[in-house]
Length: 378
Image (cartoon, rainbow, N blue to C red; front, side, top):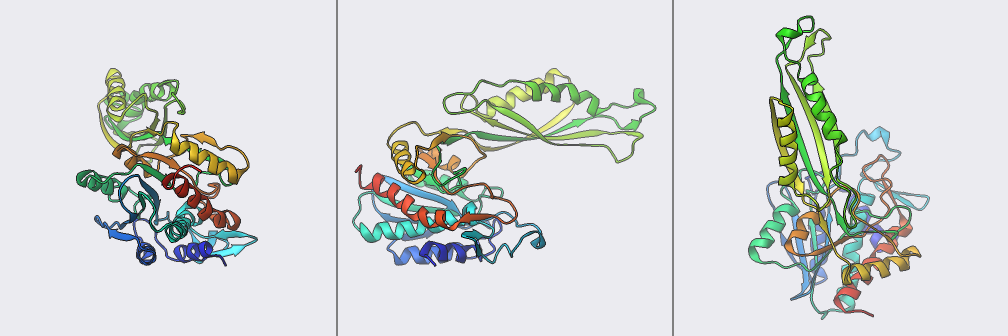
């Protein structure tokens, strides 16, 4: 087996369901230390974070990843144990194979090869890992970024190893992400008997026009590489379970994915104004997951475009789609951020997997990016 496949299997065998790191970072930190990296453990709450650096000064290039995984679900739903990595027909199966222990293993192997070949390289090569990407994301890179801001830690370029490819390795380059804003809305009514609606106040009926307006609203037309802002209702709950009771409250959850035309305070104010206009008695709680970010065309995108084209056989599509990633916490530090990783078709699914051929190609892909950025154009 190859070096990167061996390491990926070792990581998958550790059941690091978020926020438990299950010893992944200790394993990787010891390995990076042997390669000459200075390793710093940053633990916040129940979350492990690792900051490993080689070299000094600018530019600082960070490889960003996470060692935690989502729960696998019922074992019997998987063809093989999710935490016993298995190669079948040229494909590595196991929880985290694609998201993102494969990329993390490739980061480490690429870093080892790079510093072995260029021990006196200019600038700083860094690897930042967290065990809090798949969960609340409160004590992971969000807290690390706050600590970096306080101590003046600079990051110029950040490559996140999230599974970004769609059909083949390198066919898509993420150059930004939309912002994410979630809400819990409670509309208060008065419970009563359905036969006597005059003695009750139905919060479902009262909220329906407001919710319809929220769903129908065209927030903007998009901008630059970003699609239009969208709002999706993800959960609606009311009632006691009886068909003859008007409920006393309605609970609704919704999420906004938004482009740089907006920020969280602006959207919160717009939604509140709409609810007020409909005269609702309501309570609204917000969770700000992250603001949108975008890396303009320049050296980072140009180098990535050229390297990925060599692997995919054609220039990659450049996108800001998908969900969120921890790059949303690094971008506000002034870093330019991209995301490059394996095919994402099976992430968070039963029988998650990654092609062994793609996995074995990843260290070379990341090493080329590091060399082009830190050693200069070739």
